[in-house]
Image (tube, rainbow, N blue to C red; front, top):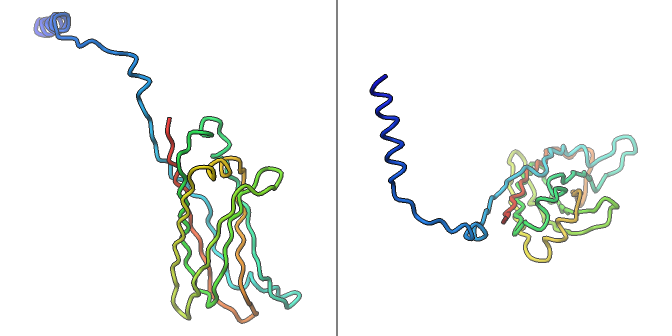
Length: 179
């Protein structure tokens, strides 16, 4: 107990006579916080059968899906985003090429931003990977920030009942933010 009391008082005395550098609190305005936030965006696994309607025996050339962009609804984020990088990773085992369009929409369904790519055809027994990266900066960032959802449209040039395979998409959005 005596040793603990000695250490305690020694620490107080050292802290009272220690060197203290003047602190300039105006430098607080010069601090820049730049996080990178990576979020999953869209995921799907389409079977070739989804491109053919067996009831009507007709091809279904386009399949669409809508995903909400809840992250962009935050007022804390709006205006702080410096760049967005979208990474779309497609794995195609269907022996057809695809056109894929991404349409960013407001709540009233008016388009704010569009982008798209072509997916390489798969081969029998082999999956072909296609990577698509879209970096958004400058004025286009305002278009993305106004969006509340993204619609992905997958279009196939031709389809029939015998078509087999799958088309898989995994995607991420990396937000480069500056506060």
